Image 1 (cartoon, rainbow, N blue to C red):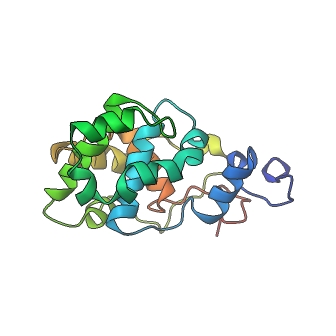
Image 2 (image 1 turned 90 degrees about the vertical axis):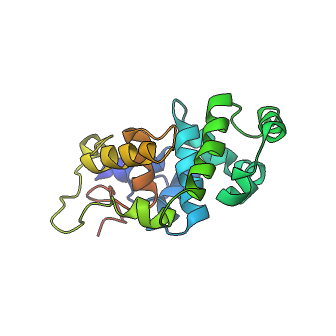
Length: 189
């Protein structure tokens, strides 16, 4: 348990002790059940932007992402055109990756085509919580699960891009669809 203790004396998942921004995110957001179309679209989009980068980079740019992508309101982002994509590519306050920007816009358009609410679709892949063993360490936390693989497959079938099983699992963790707080973490219940 001593490796879980942060400088502030709080026992949390070890990654949560590596930077003050991580501690705040761990303690107040990560693993907390999240609902709502814009909120879930934001998390799915940010997880895609994180691919290949540190989550800390994305976390520190999150407010800039929110401004740049109209608060992640899918209907607004779906209206983005070529001029918006160029504006985003010139915005140094966000991650300027053409493929990830295009994916976010394409995914907003895919949300508009859904036959049910985004949060209902995403949460339909949340595994049953009862009987699930809490991970002993972060090394015991998977990067991919059958549920995240199924989610990615379904999203791709519906026109989403940049949503592989690893990205989907990270989003599931971030939004409380799964609870991967390790044994000894003050949030492990």
